[in-house]
Amino acid sequence: MAHSYFHASITAKKWGGVPEDYQAIHDWFDGSKAILADMRHRALRHHAEGIFMAEQVFGVTMTNSAGRTVPVRLIGEQHVLDDLGHIPSFADWARAIEPARWMVRVSPHAPSTPSVSPTGLLPIAA
Image (tube, rainbow, N blue to C red):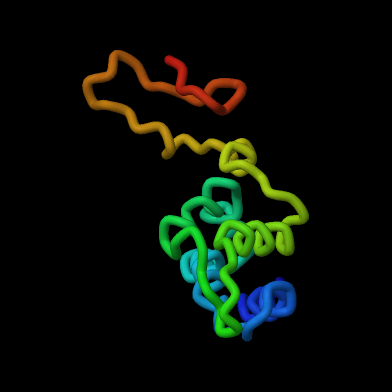
C-alpha cells in the first residue's frame, strides 16, 4: 500500500470512526520509510514483534471517534497483512538479509580474521 492514509481508511471502514482515528498507528508502522524509502523499510516493524511493539507504543486498545474500543494488535495485523499478505516473524526478515563482511566486528586482539560461514549466520575463523 502506497501511503499510511489508505491503511487508515481501510481500518475506519472495518472498525468505524474516521481515518484520522488510526493515522498515528499506521504512520508508526510506515515511519521507517524516513530511513529507507523502498519496501525494505518494512523489515523494521512489519512482523509479529513489530505488531506487539505497536501495543507498547499506543496501548493495548484505542477508542475511535465513534466510541468503539479497538485492539491495537488487530490494527497492526491488518496493516502487515495488507502490505505483505501474511505476518512474518523478525527471523523471516533476518534470514533474507545477505551477510556482509562489515557486519562482523573483529577485535584488534583477535587471533585471526573472521569470515562469514557458508550459511551466512555465524562468524568463523579464516
